[in-house]
Amino acid sequence: MGMEIPERADVVVVGGGIIGVSVAYHLAKAGVDVVLVERGALASGSTGKALGGIRASFNHPVNLQMGKYGREVYGRFAEVFDQPINYVAGGYLYLMDETVPMDHMEAAVSLQAEYGVNSRIIDPSEINAISPIVNANAFVAALWSPDDAKAEPEPATQGYARAARSAGALLLTHIDVIGIDVDDGLLRSVTTSAGAIDTECVVNCGGAWAPEVARMIGWDMPIIPYRRQVVTTVDMTDVQPHETLTIDLATSFYFHQEKQKFTVGYSDPLEAPGYQLAYDPTEWLPRMLEKAERAAPGLLDLGIQSGYAGLYAITPDHNQLIGEYRGVSRFLYAAGFSGHGFQMGPATGKIITSLYLGRQPFIDVSSLDAARFDGEYTGAREAFIV
Ligand SMILES: Cc1cc2nc3c(=O)[nH]c(=O)nc-3n(C[C@H](O)[C@H](O)[C@H](O)COP(=O)(O)OP(=O)(O)OC[C@H]3O[C@@H](n4cnc5c(N)ncnc54)[C@H](O)[C@@H]3O)c2cc1C
Image (cartoon, rainbow, N blue to C red):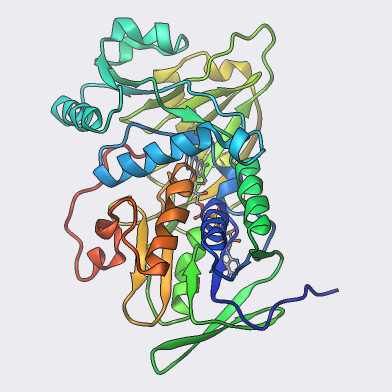
């Protein structure tokens, strides 16, 4: 039996990850008639694969502000949305070897201080008090950001979805958006696998698939999908609670503890772009084990229980795209979060709603407009890439 779809909506949101549900929630709360269309289940894209890291420690002013708002909202999510998300402020520890430029890290700490983030550079002798399993001898320093946190993305998505529905939004799942009709520069309707919805506005929250949605209006969106693989260890007995997320900056190897086990990952620079989602340890696992051996030998002696893969939606500067496309009226977008979209969910919904209503967003996101990549891109890349 097909799902009933409405004939029209003020706004159609494409994608039911953390970004889409937050956008739908904030639009509905502002009184906008909004329909969200998701081709799978809610959070079935990258959101359901995310580790749930919520960083205070960015080195880009917009991300510092958006991340701060994310921490505030997720920190009180259980009360406000009546949905536990297992929020824990266990900090992020960024391990630095001699290849990581110290002046760059010191500049990041200064910028973070300007935004009220309580981070600092620490000596190797302090590392094991924070992350006991690290081989501190392999590093010359670390950036310690104790205010960083983590939470569970799937229940957060469900919390936003429930609140969006209560505010009047219609969330449709297992329906594919297959076309967008534009007439004389004006958006007219969205074609789905269950019929058409007349609308004047689309918000593209398609994650790694956002370029496919943008192509429906003839726009080549600058996002490239990359597989990211993760393993979890077998359950440990007699385990001390240890919530810090630890990252080796030079290799991108990272781990954190979730209840009785560790989740361990590594962004392989040899991974080819594309939509492959199968977990395939053949080449990746030996490379990851090599990085583990240097940063945290013994961690994987625990034994690997399972592995999975998800997609990062990467932009040329590893920062998200948020704005309104100028080629068509009206096509807004929030995608390309390059591995940090879970924490940006709360701020993004609020910002997109302001952009839709023609108001000044509470954080100035003009630097995130996709037009920054028009022509050849030669600008800087965000430093902390996980
Ligand atoms: C292994 C891994 C670890 C991560 N860890 C973190 C972390 O610690 N902290 C953090 O902040 N972020 C993390 N991320 C990144 C985070 O998962 C993403 O940035 C975030 O989930 C993006 O949310 P989204 O809503 O934009 O995308 P998604 O969750 O991918 O949602 C997009 C949705 O759009 C739907 N869709 C696409 N096209 C269509 C269409 N044509 N019709 C209908 N529906 C469509 C898809 O089915 C999908 O559900 C991680 C990602 C991975 C893979």
